[in-house]
Length: 482
Image (tube, rainbow, N blue to C red):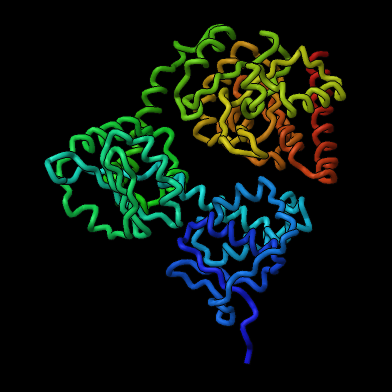
């Protein structure tokens, strides 16, 4: 029969970080290894059948060295301990124990314990964000006739105390209650009181029914719903359906989504009717001014500035890329980023005079998605859709009608579609000239940004093919100029 060999540490609450920290410190200084400690929370399954719950925790020696706690661990632990995973307390103590011998362990992103604590903290931060965003108060009857607001929310983790400060500061002048299956918060304008777990019916039992504030909010939400920027998948990821039942505006969403495609088509159609041959700009300067105000597609509405083509008004060669990138949008010039530098290097090697070519893009605005990368905000490139390319084709045709190139070089599939009006396989048609309606020759090759994304060996091979394509273009230019 196995005898008790460890220590069982009960915590007073599921989010009891202070209790965990104090006990972990004591155990650590008493040199108690993680495999001899079990942790339990109220109503949880924590604890070890063979641990002695009546045994007092050992007292550290008088000369025990205080534990070293890196800031990175402390910050993650405060969030991770709010997760509902019953193994989180043991994970944190095990990682704390290891840190005493490996002070820089938190820098090892490949370590399984470090990865796990990071995952727990990330999930908790997301749960907190959702509660901040999706709590909706409704007016209920209260004693004395005063207005009282009640909200029902179902957090995934033990975050109720963690969000209390946010709601007190944001709704200081209101009296309100937030009810959840994990507990409740009540604010009377002065004091915050915690309450026991509740049920959804408790939040709606005294609902008055007609709330002018809800009606106003629904009207506002419907008015700001932009069908041209609707991405149902991204919307559902940010606002999952399980939150909808507590949000008054959610009742409008199915109808708004259903009507978005028709509304978008109307918007695009309205934009397209403003452009016919009589409206085509007569100069490159006029095109440059007009594209700044173009809002015919979603990309034109994303807040970036349009980037005009650059080069001589009459040019033998016109080079068409996909769209401006982050650097190009910031500087307002085409092909000045990494892909542009690579293109210019290969043009020089092929003997093509860069200044003699007119350089532009199939799409005039920068399409991107914001993302946090390595601690900073970045704008990551997104490929334009076929419809967006087709809408912007008007501007490329307008540039061609003024520049009148004898040879057009399309870099990538988006540029090829802009010139041909259909999608083609770059690998199948590269190096084979095609005749455009105005008599110009079209040559198609890969986009230099494609080369930049390849690993060393594939890149060397593809870059050699790209260089060969440009040499063929250079040779054809020489023939046309003779």
